[in-house]
Structure formats: C-alpha cells, structure tokens
Length: 328
Image 1 (cartoon, rainbow, N blue to C red):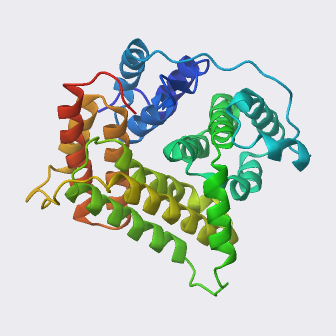
Image 2 (image 1 turned 90 degrees about the horizontal axis):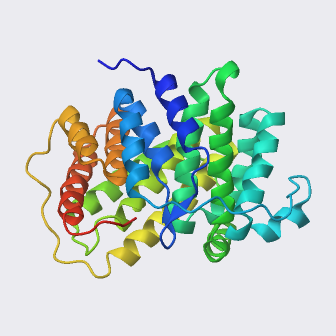
C-alpha cells in the first residue's frame, strides 16, 4: 500500500518539473508530467519521485524558450497567427497561466478546447495528451492547493497551441464541414471513443512495425480525448471524437505502411497488476501511460485488446531499449 497520496506525489513531481523544457533532442517530447500522473493514478505514488529523478538524469531537456511578446486571449487577431509557432510556446504558456489565475479552469478549457482540437495531431498528439493528464490532476485538486495543477494545465494547453498542426486542422475542419449534422443519442461520443481506443489497441497488438513507439499514439491520443470528454459540454463531444478518429487513423495509416506480417495476439496476457508492475519496472514513459490507458478503459468497457496492446508495447519497448538510448 502506498504511503504517499496522489496529491502529495503529484505536487512533488510538478514542483520538481515546473522549470523543465517541453522537449529534448529533435522534437522529442517531455513525458515526465504525464507519466508521473499516470503512475499516481495507478497507485505507484511512492515511486514517482525516484522515477522523475531517473528521467531527468537520462534526458537532456531543452530550456524553456525565452518569451517574445505577450499574447492576448481576448484578441483573435493576436493569438491565431501564433498557432503552431513553437517559438511562441512560452508566450502561450504565460497567457494560459494568466487566464487560469483569473478564471475557473473549466471555463478556460471549454473556451480553448474547440479552438485547438482540430490541430491536435501536432507532435503525435502530445499536446492534448499532456492537457488531459493535467485536467485529471486539477479535477482532483482542492482550490487551496491547485496552483501547481493550474500551471501544469497551462503548460499542456500552451504546448498544444504551439505545436498545433495547421495542415491537419485544415483537413479536419474540411471533414467537419462536410459532415451532416445529426441528432445523436446521449453518450454517443463516449461509446465511439471507447470503440476507437479498443480498435487501435487491437491493431497495435497484431501489427509489427520497425519502431514500437509511434503507433502507440493512435491509442493514447484518442484515450486522452476520452479522459477529458466528461468535462466538456455535449456540443463539443462529437466533434472531439471526429478529430481523435482522424488523428488515430492517420497515425495508423502512416506507421503501419511498412509493417511486417500481422501476428496473432498473445494467447494470454498478464493480470492487470502484473501488467502495471512490468511497465513501471521498465520505467518507460510510453509503457506506463499505455498501461494506465489499458486499466482505465478496461474499467469502462471490458475488452482483452487493451491489455494485449499494453503487454505488447512493454515487451517491444524492453527489446528496443536494450539497443537504443533515446527515442520518443
């Protein structure tokens, strides 16, 4: 049984990571806040501080970029040209930090989610993934101690905006314009996202690729949208599903193009506790986050494909890491 609470562990991790840059190497993403939150959710709060220090010791994170010009959330002609401009990432983060200090986080999220969701594919959906983990964290924080959580949500939204995919946004917006509005049963987006995540997991578990990581985001991107969906108004939910589906299909189409022969899923996958323990023991960010997705979605809608994907990812990553030191 853990000694630290979720809040204690996350507060310590976010405080330690608050000045760490968004990326390392060539557009390799800082997963530390996301993985720490996943570990806290999985009940490994006591291991987070050690994991964070080990991660910082093995990653050469870039410094946070110098601010350029303050962005105005009230002036679309000011912020819209900065979408997708990573040189403005600190301007974006500081703008969201100011907004979240003045307004309830739900209000800020509901205003900016529809502005950003079409461009969620940038850097393999990591902006929306970091935002989703921050949303889950701040939703559990009390008003008295949520300053660190507000800042992490500001970082998630800021990174998403700065790595916004302009080209994909145009394609998604065109697809949405061509969609005939229809009355959908309540909860349709939840069901559709659950099916999308399960299908992406089944695909990952049976497809061989040269690199084990990129295809994982066809799962974790939509799973991040699913995590935030309960906090969004109903009129944003179906659009969010369509954007997530577009991104997942694109990742699968691109990274499965050079796949080897399909394989059958493992006849038996580890129990849930063993699945989590193996991912945490490996220490890989993607293995940990995918294990958390598998556990979360298994509780929502039982399906063997979740565990099959997480098990396959941990095994492939263990083999990959024995031969490589850096990856995303």
